[in-house]
Length: 78
Image (cartoon, rainbow, N blue to C red; front, side, top):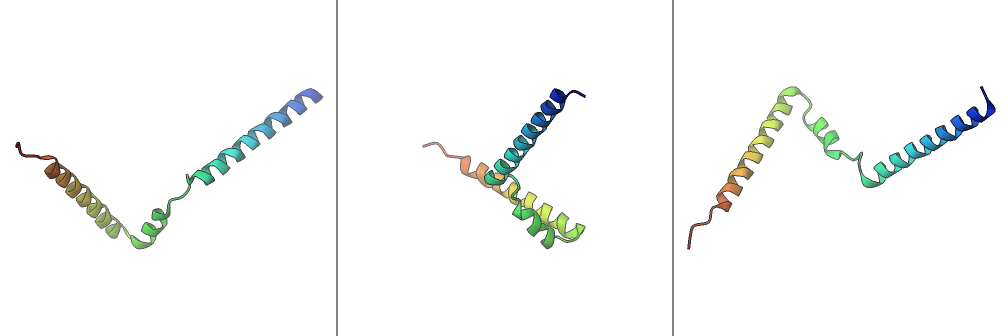
């Protein structure tokens, strides 16, 4: 291989490594990797049954919220 090719490959790999490092630092700074609820839920809902109960409770909350929004959206005519 030519000396110029090796220098070009080193330059490109260094640039790509720096680009990857910049992306990682940006992700850390903006909180892209923060998922605290995942660890808390993992500890709270240890088995499948508790996890199913948690999902059902979340669905009930969403249904109640939609029902309330629907109820609040109705306005009688003046």
